[in-house]
Length: 164
Length: 207
Image (tube, rainbow over the protein chains, first blue to last red):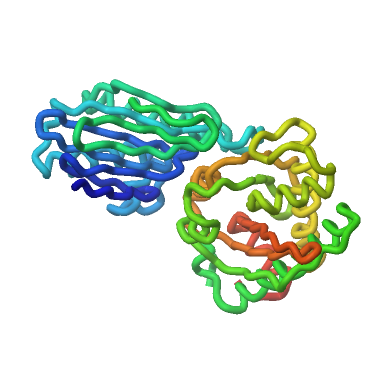
């Protein structure tokens, strides 16, 4: 029997095979799935914003909001459970532009793209390769991540489902 | 006390927002009745200060399909207005407006899209007028953008944009009744903190 653990917004968690992680309805947020196939430990983070430099008062809860700090926390959590950083492979999803909105005064439009960019940068700094990606475009995604085999299933209401 | 975020509002200040919501919802019902040429009744709206997770739950959970309309407030008051229409509400209103057989909101064509935008415009005007009349402030609204998708994904947009002023929003729940058919729509009001102060000050409320 496997358990399914829900990861909320600005939240992260890790499980061992055969448990499953899920995060619902990523819009402009990004979901980062990390898997160590040797220990079968799977981790998922749901980040809201690209960079912790935007933070007003950094604490543990706040750190989970941002791509740069959230991913580092996820890696630490997985290492704490016995995963090895050198084994980690990443699959990423989300970062959509939900509204076609043009505004001179804000960067509302491309925040999804900036989230994805920051996720990629952070993973590169940690030397974690990205082996699958379903990002951008204009629709919401629910992400399931399976501890058993490291598969990422992306579900959308408009475009159906894929397994990566 | 200086307001830095919505969760620091006191009871009196929340009452003011409730009153704005009441008047705005009343205006919206009147405007919708005129647009649909049919009387629309509205129950007393529920107005709450909620965080995003609670808003998502109130809408039926993160994966509930919903029609989202996003507008920006500009001028004296800056911030975001977001209308979240249950699919049923959108369907009922659209079929009244465009006749049967317009398809469904889920696969919107351009006609449908602009009709929904117009509804958004009218409803946004109703709320914005409530603020500008009560507080004597000039407010302009942008053309609404439309998105039909999962509630959680739509709400990620204001959650991200206003992450720096906290995770609370003003949530107005309207129950409309047309020919005994109930349908609901929800409004999120997210004024920038400075604008909120301006509204309060103009109404003679201490901030």
